[in-house]
Length: 148
Image (cartoon, rainbow, N blue to C red; front, top):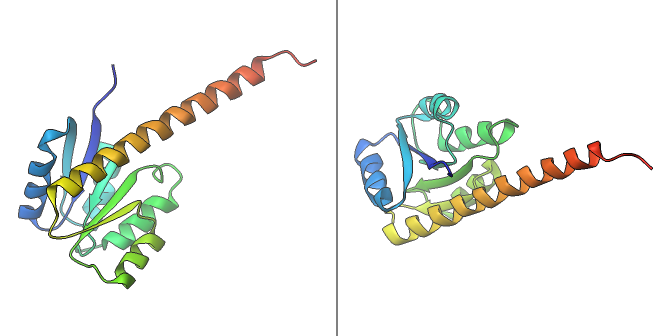
């Protein structure tokens, strides 16, 4: 049986976290919250999310900084990051991409757009995980095969 996907909602504004969680109620997943950038990094290690909905403007560490740290860590870089922010200038999107975000969604968040992006990102993560599992299996079979 497949395990539930895990989503970490990282936003310093509690009503925003609650709204995003309400929007995600149709998706069968586990949800955890983080209230600032440092809290996000701490929760990533304990909760091990598949996807992070990451606000950009947070105290302690910005979403850009959090994303850079995640993508720089080999053990964490596979976590999908969807930046959800009120920033929507071209420069902000470019900065998010340079930080390593997998996708970008502007506030106010449209529920349908959020759900579609989350579903697609979780499917992509599942496919990527399965590909990696198959790659390891093939490598193991190759290593066990007698040399000719």
